[in-house]
Structures are given as structure tokens and as C-alpha cells.
Length: 175
Image 1 (cartoon, rainbow, N blue to C red):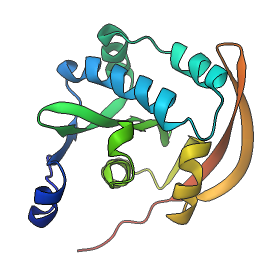
Image 2 (image 1 turned 180 degrees about the horizontal axis):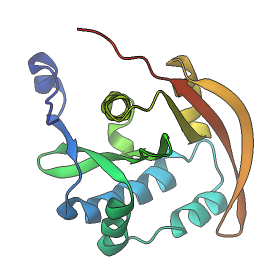
Image 3 (image 1 turned 30 degrees about the vertical axis):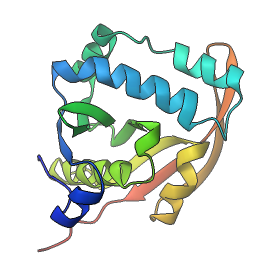
């Protein structure tokens, strides 16, 4: 699954590789999560909401290694460091998380992680995928063909956060 960006793009942007997560990625995952929530979500959630959200998962590698055992985790790496990841619950047909380092957002890293995720779901016979997307992610997914099934409110660290329930029907592309 390791896939570099195109050669022309590699000169303009960092070289990004995609693969399954390894234990050594866990500490970086913790940092990506924390910074994506605290910085990346700033336009959509208050500081109090983001602090509550970020506090739900510890900034410790051991917690993220445990999550790797629970979910199929795809990572995007740059110079050997995890800069984005997606956690998949394949049997449930659900994308549990999708986070990208804030300064690398909007460069296609999340989209490419989703392409790899969709392929994995299809390989496992899953034809519909769901995600509970944050307000910073939901509109972009809808533009990419995800169906919006409305908002829901979740509690994180004592704060209520709005998110969107989305679903996508997967179709295998013949090559």
C-alpha cells in the first residue's frame, strides 16, 4: 500500500507515503490527533469544546497502540513520521477517525487516506461506509459524494459537540 505522491508533486510538497500503521507510529498519531483538534478545528469549535475533545484520548503512544489493535489503521507518513491517519472498523463498515497534521491539511492527504480506506472496505466485501464527521470535515465529504444523514450531538469531556452522520455507497472500479 505504500504509495508516494506523483513525482512532479513531490518536488513542490513533501513526499507522502501511505501504509498500515506500525507501533512506532503511535506517538505521532497522538500528536496528529491533538494538533488537528486544537488547531485544525479552531474555525468550527470553541476552545473549551476543542480542549474537551482533545482530552478524551491521551497524548500517550500506549493508548494509540491499543487503538491500532482495535482498528485497522492507515497512516500517511512524511520522512518516516506519521502526519495523518484513519482508523477503520471494517466489520462495521465505519471510518472511526480521520486526522491530518494541520499545516498539511488541504493537500489531499485525507482524501488519499479515504481512497485507501474505501479500497480496503471493498476488499472485505463492505459496500456502504459510514462516518460521524466533524464540522470541519463534513462539507468536504459531501462534495466528494457522501450522503448527509443529519447532525448529531455527542458529549466529549463534558462538552457537547456537533457532528454530521455521513454515508457513502462504495462501488468497485474495474481497471
